[in-house]
Length: 306
Image (cartoon, rainbow, N blue to C red; front, top):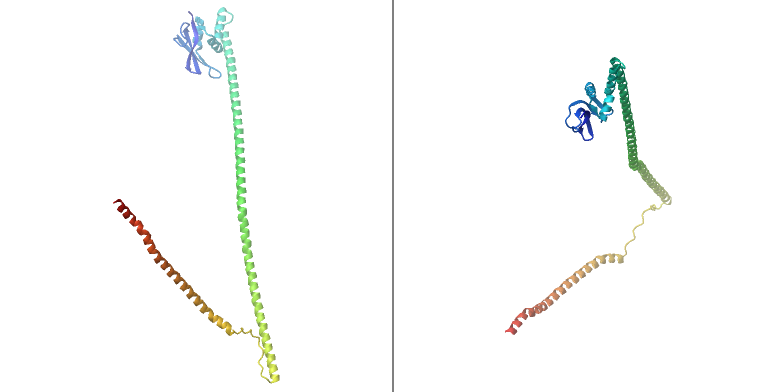
């Protein structure tokens, strides 16, 4: 049976990598192998391949048959191309130096293509990352704008509430200031009124005194002219009406009547108290009589039993 170049699975579930080995075709996939010549990891982008170029070429020349996956790996690394060129050089189609040049040119082109693919993938990743970053920044800006609007609304409401609270306080303060400003005015007006009243009374007294002096002077002049001593008329207050003897008797009798009424009331109270005491004395023997037969009932019943 021929020797095969194949892969043996390694790694955990859903993250596998493979060893490129030379093994007998009858051996199991992950079993015994002759030699390991490389490593293959398809999980990366692009896939990573590490291969011992000379050993792979040597085993191909000896007749080892690669599997489909290993054939694509060897073709990608240029092992199959070198084998083909060496066979052409043996046939005399071209020299080994030309074969080596062609191989190096192909490898350079292959590396350039691989590098271009890597750059394209890197640019794609960078563009996706930039888009994600821009989307995240937009979301953050929108959130910040919404938060700022909410804070502005809250501040506006707080200011309105403070203004509403301060308006009645300011109104009360203005009212108190107006009241305080009006109080001294009222006091001044009251004082002015009192002063005017006092002045008016003083003027009235002066006028009455002047009238009295004028009347006295006229009376004296008339007395001197007539020669009779007539007392001058003086304005005096009207005397109080003299009390009649009947009114005096009534006033004297009023305290006597009050004393008599008090004495009559006291006598009535004493009479009521005496009546109550007499009633109690009359009721006591009746109560005793009503209690005696109740006490004697058991004795009579005892006599009957005997």
